[in-house]
Picture: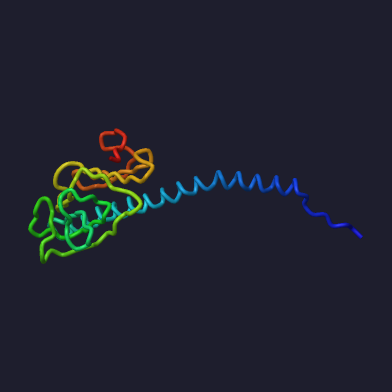
Amino acid sequence: MERLRGQNLPELMFALAIAAGLAGWAVPAFRDVQRNAARTREVNQFVQAVHLARGEAIKRNTVVSLCPSAGGTDCAAAGTPWHGGWIAFVNGDRDSPAMRDGGEELLQVYPGWNAGRIVANRATLSFRAFGQSGVTATFAFCDDRGSVAARAVIISQTGRPRVSDRSASGSPLACR
C-alpha cells in the first residue's frame, strides 16, 4: 500500500508567504481600480448631462441649462459646488446665471458624488440651438488622490464635451 504524504510546515509557510505577498500587491491596485471606476462613472454621467442639454436645446430651439442642485428641484445658490448634484432643465426665460423658475420643465436630476469633488470654472451651463453660451468650460473630477488622478470634462463653445487628464490650456488639472 502506498503511503499518503501531505504538506509539511515549511512548505505551508512558504505558500502562505507567497499568498500574502500577492494580496499585499493586489489590494492597493484593486482600491485604485474602484476609485477609477467611481470617477469614470461620474465623468460619464456629466458628459451624458451635457449631451442631453445640448440635444434638447437643438430639438426644442430654446435654452437648456445645467446647474448645481442639492435638492434636485431648483438651482443652488451661486458658488455651490457641482459634486452635490445637478439638474438639467428648459430655461424658458433664458436667465444668466441660469435659475430654474416655476413652470420651467425639469429634464433630469443627477445625484451628488460623495467620493470626490468637482472643481468648475462655471457656475451654470446654458446651451442654445447653435452652441453653448460663453467661453470654454472645464469641470475637473477629483478624488482624494488629487490632480494626478483627476479627469476633466472640457466643453467647447459649440457645446461639444471631451474628457481629458489636462486642462483646456494643456496644464495639469487643479483640484483645489
